[in-house]
Length: 398
Ligand SMILES: C[S@@+](CC[C@H](N)C(=O)[O-])C[C@H]1O[C@@H](n2cnc3c(N)ncnc32)[C@H](O)[C@@H]1O
Image 1: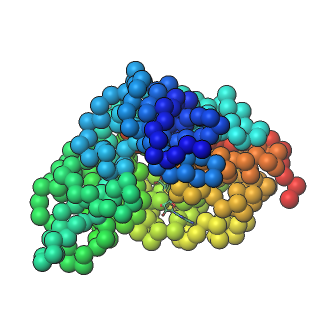
Image 2 (image 1 turned 60 degrees about the vertical axis):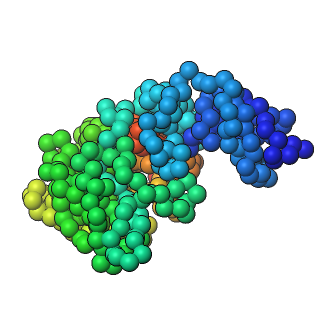
Image 3 (image 1 turned 90 degrees about the vertical axis):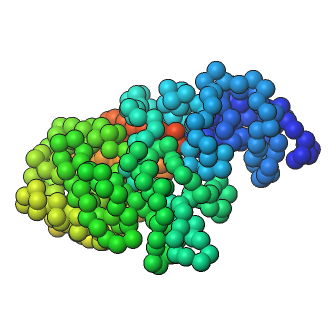
């Protein structure tokens, strides 16, 4: 048996979702942080698990032709970016290959339906929101800002982050004072360049294309507005082609998709848990004079069945935009067998939970995937946004 301290020469078969290189050696599986497809590396095992080992690179023996020097000085410790050491064009190819590999595991899913990835014009400087961890001085309540490092514990003080819009520079330059010493703070950027912290609830404006939305400092809004606009265009076209009588916007946030699709759906029902987002959603509904929109505050899993029974009429389309953990198995199953839903749009920020949920939906044999559209919302990081439209093939008798 190989000792964990003995360096191994490993050939990397591929970079898997999450950014690790996968290698096989003497019947064992190795995941090597930051190793790229086709590279040969000298690596040291850092953790042995039952079915695989984790390894770290000691030296790159044969580098990939796509390897570059990461531009960020914090990259070795921060853990926020998994792909700064690879050309952006190759990061996109890797993410496409990873998505294909994950979705191939879903029985009945036609992977030919995957479109080329929509990319971000900006590789860096695209984020309009950031969560930072204040590091307090012992005597005062003032703090400098940091990220949580790769070990998930250590706070790493930083003076910049390359992913952020340039207008965030000022938060790193001033001395910040906080009365309640919060553990973490999220800063957001408004459409006129103001920086909005989430210590108090503040409503601010965000512009996506032609539309300006109100959002809550303590609620969700997409981070990369240029790519979010591409996603919103795609979803609007899907909704326009279906022309549903009722459009259910589940996990609706401040109602971006509902507002953009308000002209094509006769009736809209939004369900959202966050108080801040629901308040902003109500203000957006009023400002944009959308009379056909009902807003329900609470958990989708609990409230959707009743909301569906009370509002269904004619054809229904359901849009799902859950957080990373995806749908509950019960919700996925119930959605898949409800009568009257003609199309489902699933927007996912985790291809793994997306695949898990699609397995449930497709297992009933009543749905087919019409298109799968990946969006690189978070360049230089492992994250990937994917939108899927499914249409019903056999009306359910349940
Ligand atoms: C990925 S965001 C999508 C928001 C919105 N569709 C958008 O694009 O701006 C997920 C949203 O779901 C909300 N949420 C999370 N869990 C929920 C639940 N179980 N029921 C209802 N809303 C939930 C969050 O507050 C957040 O606004």
